[in-house]
Image (cartoon, rainbow over all chains, first blue to last red):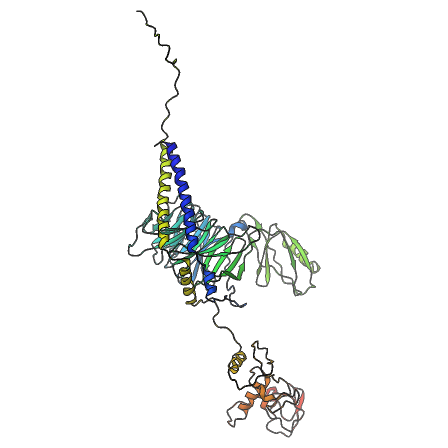
Length: 411
Length: 214
């Protein structure tokens, strides 16, 4: 067969695929007699309501830093199964392990490659894994001895992917097996002890996992069958950034660049619900990550504009604005005021790798008539207790700052 | 040697030829691989289409989701609604048909029932009828838990007890005739004393040093 004939066949096959996909879509639509919200309302379900003190932030874990503010975002985090420790990864090149109850950092692991995109805790809590733009998955044993520089050594490097590692997760209850997802369009199940890829595990347990892709689909996989996905889920219109199993194990949720979260059924393939923020313009913020509460009633969704909403999964309504995080961008000018006749003090100083930012130290000077002013050169302002921490983009000598803040005191 | 000349003028003149083209095996293999992948996908899509004939509609899965969620407690969702005690009481009272509630509750309860108006008059220091200041029968307000009269009523029940172990509340402290000007609430004025002392905490003259000021 000639290349020309093959190209013709290719075109014909592509048309057949598109036509079959359309027929599938139409047939599925006929089976979508209701969605979760419609059914829940028909059953008289009422909305979950929160009082002002019912869902509040109890801890903020701060510790990741970065050369430039945009790179200090936390890219990924994972909990231990006991829910008492967290590992977080940031492109400041570190994995931090936190005690979730006390907020203390127990490990700060310097990574061989700073461009980390994902991290995971092992089921036993003894190891953490991470992966990123180096196309490798690195494993660290938290109990091993640090080297002479005080760094935790890598205990195993899993190499083989031909593209970035965007996601990694341990197989439940198995410290020796890990699944990674990559920009090379593959997922790999690893045997950590040998460092080899494997797709055959205990045949008596059917291990399923789901992967979300930049091709807008989500695929369900059986780890015993590498050659094809068990099912492909269509519906999203943009990259699928986050996938999470629903607590019952028969459904899963997704978050996408199309700004929606969706709930799919594994056994039938149906899209059961869409969680869509209505936006006037088409600039809906992308969903970056999702999580379900233990009953599945609440769906937490984080968006690229820094919002985090709580959705009622049954009624498909937003019930709470959980938090807002400032999009990371420098603030050059800040309008500040004195409150309660006290000058707001500034604590300490921060020295960064590339940019020397000196936060002047000002003592609390007591009462003063209230006034306000404009201070230029402030990169970012955060509240620390009852004080403000200003990160300056220019170097300001303490005396110059003091002159500005309290001229009448001649400090 | 005589060279023979060809007299065949029908043949085209010889022309230089292009070099033979190598077969594009890589392109062909790549194209073949693409076709095979698409054919494989066609197979999967056909399978999926067939399977849809036996798949139940979405409503069944929706029911499973709702049943699962409603059957599980969520630690993040408040389950106990904080109803005020008075509201619970009045809801019970609503069921008692013989009780005529025609007053509007002053307690700020948001229930739909009418409740007796409570006497919170400060001068109402007993549960006798009626309160001299506001004229409302003081004893009718005892069901309202937040009213001062209720508290006093409860207090008076305890204080009337003959048991010496029952705590006596300040509202039940008897005022003795020997200290008419004493308005110190802590002043016990007991036992009777012949002398008059100035109680520093209340700045009133008292027949006995205020226990709390000693």
